[in-house]
Image (cartoon, rainbow, N blue to C red; front, side, top):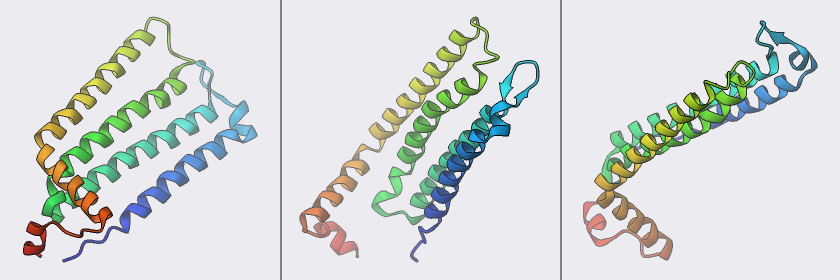
Length: 166
């Protein structure tokens, strides 16, 4: 049974739409001039925070669903599903730092800035180590998948053991 991959386009359209809509709304005059509470957080910054945070959440959901579908389809790419989740987690964690810091800068005291920085440093290092570990554990599957891609680009088609399985 062939799996449909069209859902990826839907996710990408919604992610791009959230990013563009957040930027457009944050640039409108009412959002630029309005502040929220005594902390003086701009409404435009809140809109961008929600839009960018939502886009990052959708990006992680896209990676998780892609990983799940790779696992369900099986075959030679099935073992790569853990690498996909680890990679997308690293991308989302690293990107979320700039989204969060841009939003909380007006209320962030100088004492808390190093705490936020070191928390993200540890989270990014943890995500990177997880990705390296998963790539190490699944290295045979990764090398086999890369070999198939290289063989297909050279025009050799499927390796001999894959032809027999087909």
